[in-house]
Image 1 (cartoon, rainbow, N blue to C red):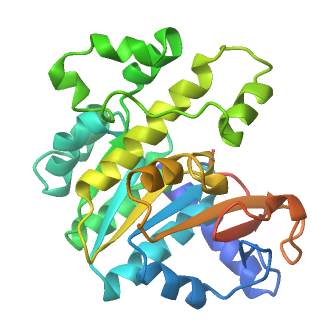
Image 2 (image 1 turned 45 degrees about the vertical axis):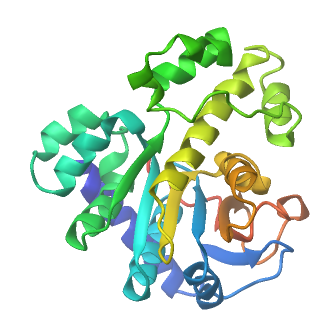
Length: 284
C-alpha cells in the first residue's frame, strides 16, 4: 500500500508539471517526426500485435501502457501478454484474474516483481475488471540460466512437460543481430557466446507465447522491456520469422534532457518512440 501511495503522489506531481506547460514526454515516429497520440492509436487498433517496449522503472511508460490498453479495449477485442510473468505461472495468474486466490497467494505463486504493485497491478486490475485475458509470456528464468551455462543444447535435457514452457526446439538464432552483438560489447565479452543466447530464449519464448495465444480480429498487446523489441529485433524478429505477414506495431521509450527535440541516435528504434524527460523520478 505504501508503494502504491508513493506512486500516486509521484504521478500526480508529474501531471501537475504537464498542466503547467512543461511537457514530460512527446511522441515521435520512426523518422523522428512528432506525432499525436490519436494517430498512433489509430494504427494500433489496426494491428495484429503491438509490442510496447518500456523502461521498467519509468512511471510515464507505465501510464502510457494503461492508457493504450484502456483506449484500444473500448473499440477492439484485446488480449495482453507480459514479460513480467513466466509461462509456468499461467494457471496461478488465471486463478487471480478469476478471484480464486488472494493477492498474497498470487504474489508468492507468480513470483511478482518487486515493483509489481506500483507499475503493473493497474494493468492486471483493469484486465480483471473487463475480462481481458493476460498471458504469462516469458521463459522461466531457470531455463534461461541453463542456456547461459550450457547453450541451447542444455534445453535438450528438459522433460517433455518442461519443454511446453519454452519456444519449440531447436531455437532459431542469429548471433549477428545487432542487439545481440551490442550486448556482447556492453559486457566486454563477459558471459561468453551464451550470454546473448540467454536473451534469445526469452525473445523466442515471448514471441511463441504471443503466437500461440493470439486470435484473428483481436489486438494482442505485449508489454516488455524495450531491449526485447527495439530496432525491430528480439521478439519482433522471431514473430516475423514465423509469420512475415503479421501487422506488428512497435513502441519504444527513450529518455532525453529535452523532449521537444529528437536525438538522431533514437531514429529507427520503433514505429513510435516515446521521449520522456530524463528528470522524471523513477519508481525504484
